[in-house]
Length: 232
Image (cartoon, rainbow, N blue to C red):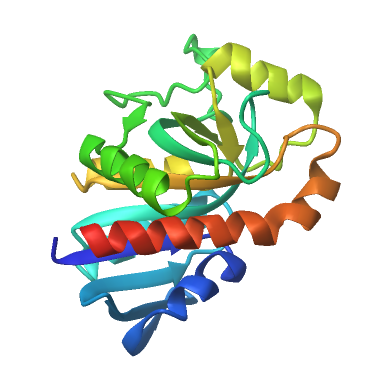
């Protein structure tokens, strides 16, 4: 594994990880600071993409074109879509899709991207297995789940919308960048993994829970990512 690209949407999601870097060089492209350096003697590029699918997709393409990364890992927080997935637990993506892609007026099912051969983007199985192993070793006190990440340019804080995401897409968690990163990685034939720590329940309590548990959730993803990088 030559170079690892790590994307977080917000400063809070990448700053703690950057504290573990050495020999840092920063290159600003498209208003994003790409921090190139080393963690455990592994070459990494860590970047805050900004929130939303467009920022995330642009960021991923720059990692591929400018920095020639060999793998992309998306880290951050998400809302749980299932009762058994609790706040501070971690979800590892089996696959990802965009829940707000809506071409139903042309006869497509919800979530389907017209004229693409697939709208469901599968994570690299070796990365998923490695992440599960690291979770068991490094943060055994946390619940670990593997399942579908559903992405849209919406912060979900409505129970009816949450129930729709589960019934329509069988989602495990919902956030705002993962599937865009997954699609860009797929188009560039780059292995990817989405790592999401649960900060809220994606219902009426979401805004209050997010503010309270975001920091705890991010600490868990940092511990996981450090373990993944060490083993890659």
